[in-house]
Image (tube, rainbow, N blue to C red; front, side, top):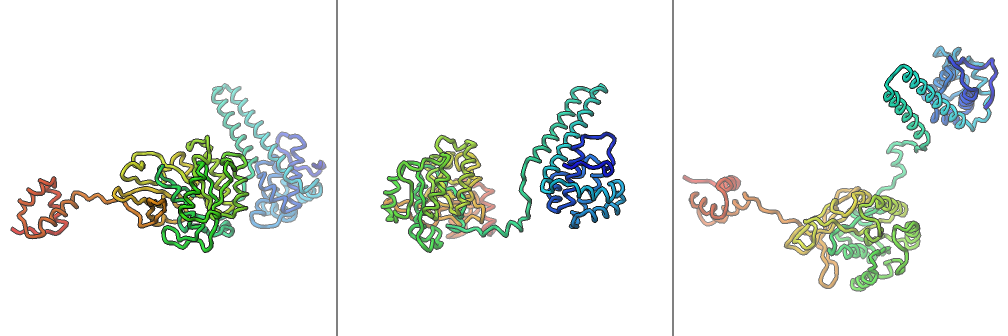
Length: 474
């Protein structure tokens, strides 16, 4: 950085600093006065308080005021701004502003100059609080308090250094982002969003793979979706990644359901490894590019990441990377996953209901998927299962559908079952009154005796009578 002549040096503070500090500040200001892009860069690195010389602080402040007001910066307008504020003489006058421009080494190096200014400012700050700490110690302050003071100051400097080292992206408004975001598209409207991870959960033995295969068949055979919505206009392929060594079973099911096997793509037996392999996701990208599938199915999450417990923090890292593949390719990835085994989610019971919290393992599994589909059995008197959306990020959850695997291994979609409503005590009392009074009026004492025999309390009977608007005659 260039040397300045004695005639053009600004006024110093009480104690001088090394020449490189002065040169860095002069070079930074000179570059800013010479090129608008240099000024923009410098504004992101330094601010007014980083300059040691008062004259330089005044010049920088004037340039910042002009820049914030949208006024192009040059020595003339900066001089006028300083004069307007009454600071021109303290800043060295017009001659000093011109000397800053004439002796700038390389305008393109403004980031280096400004960075040097920032480092010098930090060094002075360290020296200042070290001196303050020394004064406190010599004055007899408590050593612990002095140490705490030093710790706080050091923490501030380290935080500032970390913030400088981070290359943060620019902030934009959501309106600006909206110009580049395409409308969300769906493979199955409101159920399977394109470009995202989806989860299909159910207890073991409920037919998760059957359900996933039936959804895949809508793609390969152009069938309507289970809710009656139109399927794809043209048959597509499905990339099926079976990590449970069930290729033979999968093949038999395709034959039994008379599905087009050439539209189901899968790795060669023993090929492809699992998704913990460092190259697995790159391989998956290649497969998707080659096969151009409309849907990717992973069966199942547990075996796709062997050796990684579902509660392991690494599962989040793996799923984030998998979600990025879905986003890049625009293909929905449906992951089959097991549920926890609470009492109400065991297939051996007469009924069980699921929500998103029933997915087994870390909560990040559900958090990183944009749609969670669940198979459960809400009605103990109906063998039909219910397929419903228990998490939907892009829409309201659609109406559920009924699901059943027939004795022949075929999948049948139907009206969904629902949980029976348990009648309340008042409902039972009201039904009792309807039956007893259907033929003829009855004396209330007789009704009370019969109701008591059926464990219907007097108060409940009266409330039911009031609800039914029964009139009592004297």
